[in-house]
Length: 360
Ligand SMILES: [Zn+2]
Image 1 (cartoon, rainbow, N blue to C red):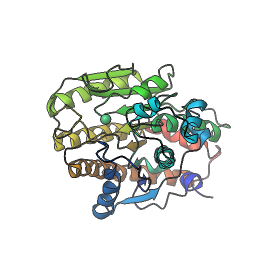
Image 2: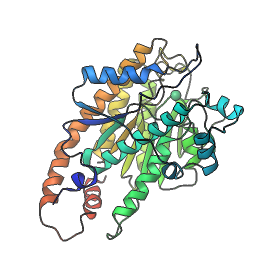
Image 3: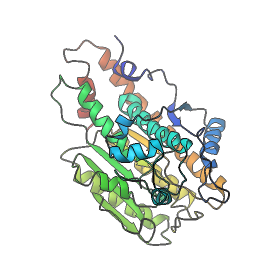
Image 4: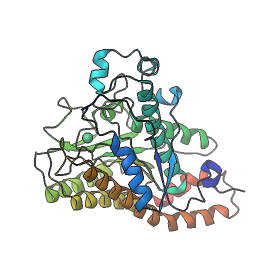
């Protein structure tokens, strides 16, 4: 009988952390457009060249039905059919094109696949794009068309229910750890009244979006914030978030590891060093691993004056995700051994049992 992981995804034989990408779908942007479209391709090439421990997969596009878990049908059809207004396109920051639709769908698809792999036993998996956290249920904004994390979170909750029907279970709780320098306003708005999804956002107080939404926990940082105060704020925020989730611990995390808090970012306004960002990533992965919470990583923003700086920062984040994945594997192997032994419970129950075992 196949193990839970093989049965769900076929990824068990994966020799390394999985990273999903969609950078073949490049938008036709006008000359001089500020969005660094090239960095997605450069990141994948850098990962391929320097991190043999990362297994790359092109993602599938998210379907209308999947998008509808977090988006209003009118918004999905306006994007799909190209009937978005000029004002709506201006708010997104991209002109509409067929490629924009494909790219947006695949970016969501990559986060869905990363989350599914993380949950199915990988522990850690990545989207080399994504983190489109400014998209609301009814509109896009700030280079974000659809909200990848919102769709993936809802879909993983639905799949969790579908696969665990015969087993007394709690629903899948989710935590979103958004460390992009801009507030995750779309995500906060979509999950405002959803107690099953905890949203944490650390962001620049004076940065976009200028009208912020209420996350479950918002931490605002002053312009020019450096490594020390940032990491102190992060430690406190993570402690508070997990304390507030203690009664219903998350079984899945989304981590938006924006590179835009970096000191050389054009838009960030903060002053984190490369080492500070690496320390940030390590803290997040360590806290999640300590609690046995699988994590899907999205890259989110990064607008370095030199695109190579942003790519190097994001490559480092992927490298740290690989290190976190490696730490997860001994735990996974012991679970696989346990799963291989005869057991009375239905197969679907094993994931819940493992969640209990790994709980805080
Ligand atoms: Zn950002």
